[in-house]
Length: 444
Image 1 (cartoon, rainbow, N blue to C red):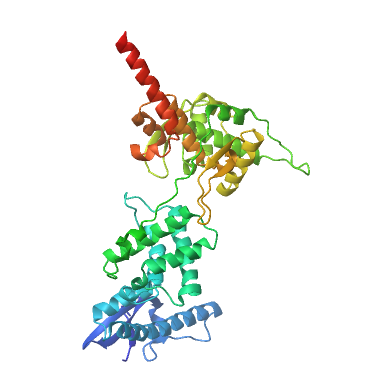
Image 2 (cartoon, rainbow, N blue to C red):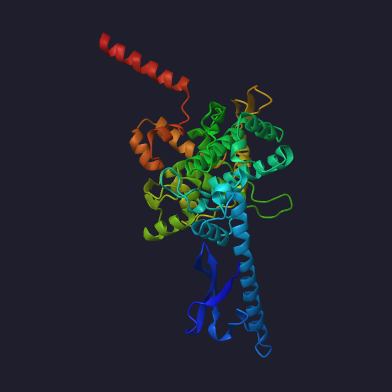
């Protein structure tokens, strides 16, 4: 097939290049996505004229453009060949155009219908930042990172244990069990593996609904693994008092100044008294600075902001403990450090504050089922602050669920309840007292 390159508007100083060739018995024109100086175009060679008299940089630019045209010409032939093999026939013009557009976007294969599972997942992840989740919101960076982790692990599993890229049709109980054993050998917990399976199930469902395959494995029960309900701790009001009061070291082993301990302690306490998400806590230094300045150089009674996760406004009261922290820094809070470092640092701070009581949590190991006893500080992360706020405010019994939701920014009562660390014993004790009191009043 002969392909010629022409200028679309040779009368203009700068013109885009089009490829012209006969396909399906018709003359076709295909834009190359390149623009060249019209006066430098050589009609005979169908390339840019490169004169030795022009500046070296300009000459190099033209050489690059000519090489791109060579590549584009080869690509046209390559796409037709690839599609012919995949489809078992010569592609129609529309099929060719789809393949061309995919290749121009950097996709691995010309036809989306002939991707392996691994290839399709790679494209899914690449496009994830443009996608919306089931709630119509952008997919978070954390979720995309989880996608990448699962994809990387699947690629390793395919290389080491399958021997080839995984196809959609390959998925069944045996393949899934093999992947789970592969992750167990890495020491990965039951819950992490269950989350992996949930992601794989979502990918199979998404590709199934777009008619890329007809494998219904994702609908089977083995694709719905159960997770172990782990202990989600919170800090009591007494814990928070200890944490605020503890005097933290300001000097390191070699006499260097240490600020991380106090920074993390103060920001964590602020989150415990406001219930904000970590993504919003990171914005607090700027938010509080503005609120402080707007309030005439004193601590504001409320902080109003748009939540990062839900994109909805919230008005949070600045309670006494939060006021003490803000006043301590004169409205100029320190910036949050790396989240991973903060999670490690808050454990050290809690230990220094003497918050070391032992708690028992179910094992999430695939090889051991015995419950594990740990000091509470080992289970605390930045996210514990949000659970601490929700649980402590709920325990005061002065707010309705809707009022508490308005402060935490939760969109449903069921989601909020996952944050309330109220055990059954405590609930049943309160219920018993209410029953006794009601019976006393009735008897009287």
